[in-house]
Image 1: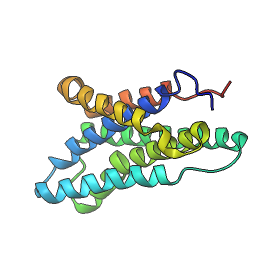
Image 2: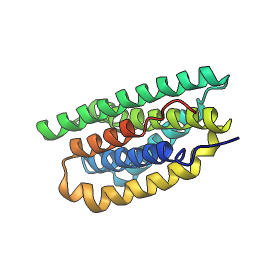
Image 3: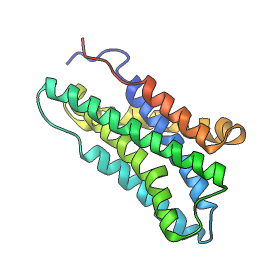
Length: 182
């Protein structure tokens, strides 16, 4: 199977966008109330569960269907990240949204669950389309996530509002959309 030399770039950028959303959501949700250990457990379970569910949902089929499936999942991920950006923007303008359990749950779904599920769905579809299996993009995505975590912790958190961090992730995700295979 002939894989283009830059085939790793889209999953790398998805991994980086995933890390930005994960770290921004943990930062916003973790310090909004009490219960550090419970909050960490809930956040990490949601983050990892959403990513795993997205990866697991990868489609199977012929190459024409796979390209369409990747594009649908990419659009779904863009919408999820835009929802995260809107929630982070509202959070910044209103001074927080975590006054009760319901708003924290909605915040968790929009800031973390949707973007990470969308990223997992994109990664799984890319893996199925390009390599015949979802796991083929794992290394590039993990490297992107590692870079995204460092970028977020060192550069984004000290210098940006949470909404801007989501826009960075949205930009990386939009810029990495793979075109048709040669």
